Length: 227
Image 1 (cartoon, rainbow, N blue to C red):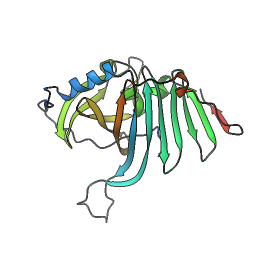
Image 2 (image 1 turned 90 degrees about the vertical axis):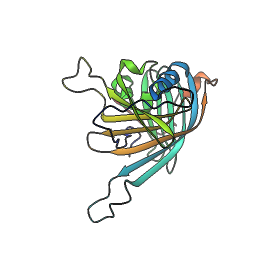
Image 3 (image 1 turned 60 degrees about the horizontal axis):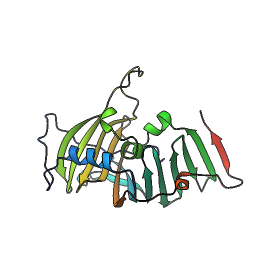
Image 4 (image 1 turned 45 degrees about the horizontal axis):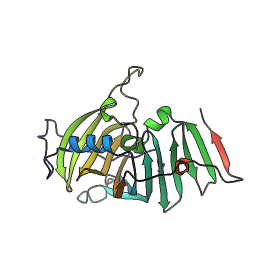
């Protein structure tokens, strides 16, 4: 699965859920807003799992099944600069340098460049690492407390220029907060594509040299430039 597609099935109650307070008295929404407001740079580890429901004839009592897993490192610098560096089981990088979005695939020896814009908004990393105000693009709703996290559901706001719905490719999104940090990202797209991203070893407001977000394709690599 491409790093452009990330999601997981979210169970959402039909009626509002009472906000669940963290140990310091903060709700999930308050933790998320504070993280976005106060984190200028960060780096850490991620694990990304692609999941699916059991097929006909398979055991139905084991829940979602992991069909693919990748892991690697991420760095970001607001607004809108990040590197999503997949290291295992293959090497692939998604890089936003503030002007363009670059996908580097080492196995294919191929670099794809496209303007940031809407392409950047459609990446999961941009939800956490993009602009400094989530409320501009999402309606935030308190979710449940599970897996040691306070969950926040994000509903994309409709773009005034969109014919219908929002510009985001996801129909459901949620972020799991713990001790003021995002520890998991859950999303699902309109096709039912399901993935879980967990974050670990997060270090905030570190010094990052400007060239950490530069990328020059190796000599001989195939370069594609999309509009």
